[in-house]
Structure formats: structure tokens, C-alpha cells
Image (cartoon, rainbow, N blue to C red; front, top):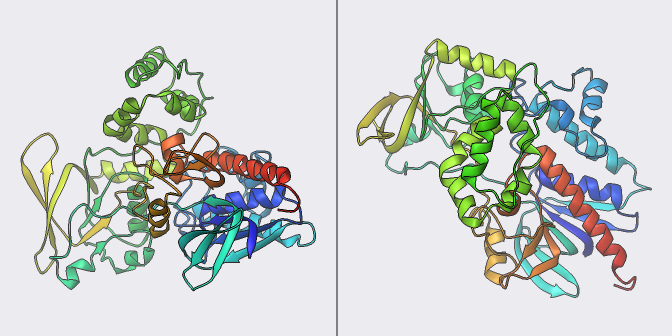
Length: 458
């Protein structure tokens, strides 16, 4: 069957696109959403059932729709989970909100377009339908879309060392994907744990361990030993930031920010003021400046920009102050199976000294891999055929400012879009809900306009 729109993916980006399309397309239109994740729209982040796993964006900014900013807060009220606009809701509640919002849209069968959910992976792409792009499905079927939206998210980053030399027992104590939370029940109360990576996922797993009765020591190893800052309980309004994106370099931007903070503006207000202009500033940077940002400034950007809910931050800081958590800045070198645990060797940052840790568990919290093409067989096949090309920084695929994919020749394809992390090379800040929902709506509008302009006989 040839659909008006095929959405490839089953995470938040895919559902944000689908919801916007259902709201905007006429009842005569048709949509297919291809994905093999049974929890459509919830993905890894919003499927957790632990209430202490919180959003790091206030509830007032987490609506699925730009024209209904209070939608999530109102949903919380209806579910007897009263929330102030500045509160940080649980991620599990947000996942349920996404599910309920989609279900409410689909309930109106008579007044909406056709929506089919195809529970399968798209394994290949073919161009053998007039005016449409076809996809081969893992179970052997095939569908096509006149417009296609790629919403393929990120995978968990792999460990930086090979664990093939570890015995089966030791390998079972290396947690490659911490979001499979069943591992928490296997950790003994006094077991020694080392978490690789010191970002938001690390904090989630530390508090998850404590909630499951773990009372032992936790080592945290990352390249710089930096941890995210917390949101304040009394947030100030975002500050106006004076930056000309067309004339700015990374050094100039940093000087402006420091000058503003030194003059008395709260740094969180400056960062919040930057949030609405991040994409504009990123697009104004020369390629060399973008590369420089990724090499040198990214870790500091992450800890200031992606902050933690205040009460969660307080719990984490309390554990640090008590010495339960110890940070190490360095580079992982080797893992050795000792029979009763795992020895870790790492090179201390800024020196050639090798340090050692002896632990019972290693937890990979190095974050999500970049949305390059390597993590997706479908994207690799589409690149081989010339439908997509990697962006110059290797962050995802090359798209234009309207989120339309570029082909091998650098030509914009008017019927092929990408939404979410795949478009980081063009937009940079495109993994948080406020950014994705805006992009999803813009893509939906483009698709509706394209359909209206198409001859009726097509």
C-alpha cells in the first residue's frame, strides 16, 4: 500500500510527528508508523517505572503541542498528580501522558485520517513506486509513502574497551545498558560499583541503586569527572543574551556569557536565555567552530545546560558529601577478571599515571551514541543507495533548515524528512521535548502543504 506519510521509528520523535499529522491532515489522508518497540512513543527515557527518575525540564514546558502549552500540566491534574508549572514530573508519568495523548487522538475514528502501526523494523529502502519511497520490512512485507519522516533515535554508547577477555560471570556484572533495570535487583547491599560516565544517566542509576537497598561504595569514572548541576528551586526568568550569531565565534560567545555573569546575572538565567537561541547560534557558527565546540566545550555545556531537578540534585550531593560516591577523572584502559570481581585500570587525566579500582559491578552510563549512520542498518542501506548522507560532523544525516534530507549529490529531497537526534548537525539542540515538538509540528505543516499542492490524481 502507498500511504500519504510513512513515519519510520517508534520513539518520542515518531509519536510527536504522528500526533501533529493526525491533528492537521484531513480524514482522507493515511499514515503508517513503522517500529518494533511495543511501547510506542515511550522509548527508553519514558518507560522507566521508578518515580525518582525525573524529567530535567519543568512540567510547564513539556506539552506535546506548541499551541497547547499547559497540556501536560492539565493531564497531571486529571490524573490526580497536581503539579506546579515549575515542578519536575516523573519520566514514567510523561511516558503515560504521551501514550494517552496519542490514544485520545486515535479514538476519534470518524474525524481523523487513517493511522496504521506496523510492528516491524524497516530493513531496506526501494524507489520503485511512482512518486513514493518504499520500505522493506523485517517480516517480509513492504509499504511505501509519498512523504517519509525518519525518526530513528539513539542507541546506548558502547563501552570504550573490549570485554571479550572476561569470564562469563564477570561479563554478567558488566551492565552495558543500564535502562534494563532488572540488573538492580542482582546487586548486593555492599557490592562495589563503578559507573562509567558522569552525566544525567549516572545520577539516575546511583539513586536507583540506593532505592534498591544498595549501601556500598560507588566509584564514578569519566574523562573529566564533571557532574551535572541542579536547577534552582526559585528559578529566575531567562536573561536576554547579546550575541550576534552571524559574527560570533566560540571565544566571543564565551566572553559574552562570562561578562554577563560577572555583571551579576545568574548563570542559570543566562543558560536559559541561550536555550531559545541555541539553534540560531549553532547555525551561525562556521564548521571549524562547531568542531571546536564538540572537542573542547561540550562537557561544560552539558553540565550547565542539562540540569537536574532540585530535590534529585540534593539527594545526589548528600551522597557525595558523605563519601558514598567518589569521582575519578581519567581514561579507561583495561578490565581484568579476578575471579571474585573486576579490576579496572585507568589513566588519570592530565598525567601518565595508571590508577586501579577493584569492583563487583561496572555500569555503562557513558550516554547515548551520536546519531550517526553506523547504529542503523536501514540508514546504512539508505546511504549506500544515496538517499541520505552523513553530516560533516558525523552527528547524524545532512538536512536543510526545513529538516529535509540531502542526497549523495547534496540535493534536497522534498519527500524525505528527518526529526530528532538525526538532525543534530543542522540544529544541535534537538533531543529535548521542547525542541522536538517544534520540529515535529514544522515538518507536519510542510507535509500538509505539500499534500495540498499535489494534483488530486496523484
